[in-house]
Image (cartoon, rainbow, N blue to C red):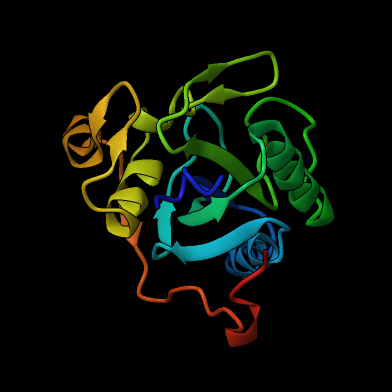
Length: 178
């Protein structure tokens, strides 16, 4: 029996922050993802530093988390927006610096184009800060409609990104919810 047969689907969530204690915000976001109902924690990539794209402000810390979930896409999106809000996320203008940014990158091979959510994320395959942590977390992953993540990485080599030695420290007892 596959995950999908049991109603579970693998979802990837991009994590980013460039205001306040960004490292702590990413770790707290991972804990919040672990606590989601109908969701099972799979893991998280290392932490990367990258410059803002189409914006200004401090560098971002980024990571990608994987979860298995039974939540419908819009329910999962609302849960991510709630986590952002609980961490002080404000949206004063497009691409403003943020205390926490959670992007639903993809859910299995689902394709969706709606007013609130597009899957896979429409620019994820164009961003090194998505692709590099994703390739670390899920080697061989195919970005829906675009191909292997490792191949897509070759198209973003001009985007500066640095893997940090310091990974996220997560509590051991926050590993599973369901």
